[in-house]
Length: 380
Image 1: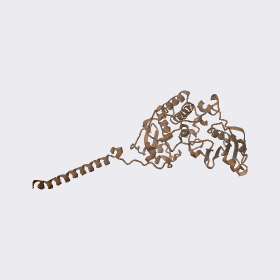
Image 2 (image 1 turned 135 degrees about the horizontal axis):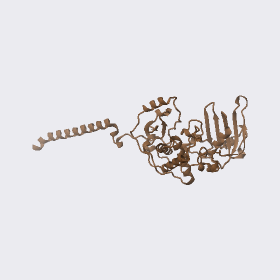
Image 3 (image 1 turned 120 degrees about the horizontal axis):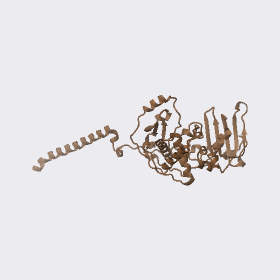
Image 4 (image 1 turned 135 degrees about the vertical axis):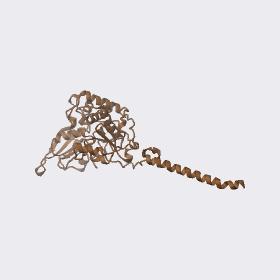
């Protein structure tokens, strides 16, 4: 009898115990939900990696037509996102020798011409370059990242590479400071304040892309952004970076290492690389097509492929329309547009400028010259 009379009391005790546990869990859940960022990272929904062939396209730097005051006001209204902020891991350049030195000078040029002779600003810019090099949306070399789109008059990724800024000269001391800062970043130095930012701009301009990205940091007058979702998380920054940076013609005037690799003497670095051999065949436009030059030229097979852009710009001059086509095989170089399919397929490099249409593009034959960015390859 005693055992039987205790059973209902035990059931009530078990029921009230479970009720207490349930209420406690609900209370904890409410606190976590109210506190937002206090939810443990392991309990938050994690961004799902998209298919390997789905990669975001880096938008060009196109600015909204605003005054500096209006741009500053609109930029200030964009909230800084702190959730999910991650510091960048150290980066160590894989190559050595001349390739590393050329990568250092590309990085130093970006740091100096984008941030001036300011150590903190240079490190912030350098961190963005390294972040991009690891991200699948960008070229996989330091120089490739810095000079992406520089063959165009507008729409380059770093404006100093296509707006004529490289014609300006900093003091030798400022250049050496930038190179030292770049050396440190290629040896594992980081600038954690900008996290995994892949984009930035000054606060007195407003690119059209700023509404589609997340603002995560401010350094002096520069605002730093990352992609939303998976492409802004640490899992996206796992690309292998080349350790074989080649020469860049646009750096030849300030970097002897790039000049020498292009076949120039260090004291003649400002002279354009002569990547063409023999005389160019220039067919001028006639009548309504006046000023529409077409250039057929034999290119030096030993020249750096980046130097072909400089050769095209030199020969096209200030023509509003210019078509430049080059072949490294002299046997297959035609003298007019009436070329065979074999001749067209053997073309090594092409450049087209059409100011009226706002178009400028350089393309390489990627079966002959490998490019880090597939968009620089001729279509076959």
